[in-house]
Length: 151
Image (cartoon, rainbow, N blue to C red; front, side):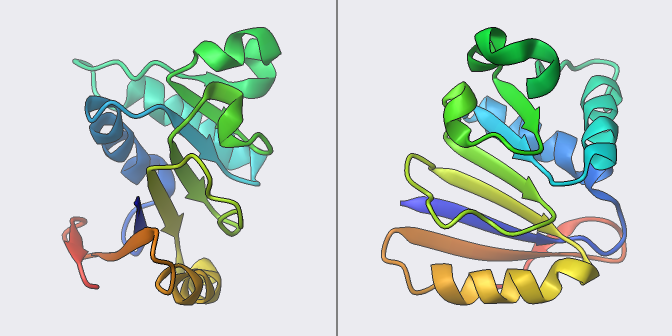
């Protein structure tokens, strides 16, 4: 069963929301692929993962910087193009764009989207909510910046 969290961003940007979500996924034993089509956002996410909290460390690398030999060793791999196989990820954090059609090997998906991605998220929700192998949940960001389960 794949747990798919649809996270609608309203107050904060992805670089503020992603580090705590990744921290929780790592604590649960997941290997994570963070994918966005936007190279500028990828750089912001990299910085956020390094600086999110002074008392914590989120081990990660960017696929184009660590190279194909070291990518598989990264517990968190950031990319614009790679698939979860690049670091044997069982958790995909997709920011912007759409989820892949093939979800094989994934146990958890974090699908972050803003108002511009709302229609894509709705279309994907309709698809995954009919799958017997998926458990989708919709999380809306409240005015105080916390996520509340809305569906």
